[in-house]
Amino acid sequence: MRMYEVIFIVKPMEEEATNAVIEKFTKLIQANGGTIEKEDRWGKKRLAYEINDHSEGYYVLLYVNAEPACVAECDRVMKITDDLLKHMIVRAENGVPESDKE
Image 1: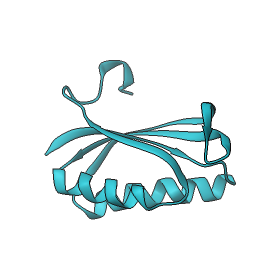
Image 2: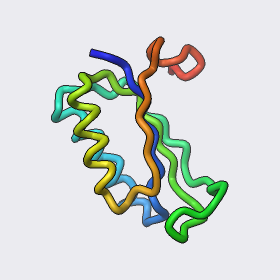
Image 3: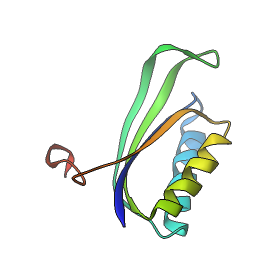
């Protein structure tokens, strides 16, 4: 298993709907054999430029320990989810950074 950083921006919605989108992806990762090492919700931030007519978004960073197939499935689902403005998945070379550990 490898460590990945999964960051995504949820379009502005009600708090319950935002939480449902985040929970959807955490459950998807867990259902495909991955584990969430840390969930970091940055909250609503102003975007540098408008994306799909939105100037704000809710940022979420997940540190995930998973197989490449799990990450590929997560990426596929993120691409077709209309509630996300952007997403990015990168491999974390050294795991969860010391400054981010609780």
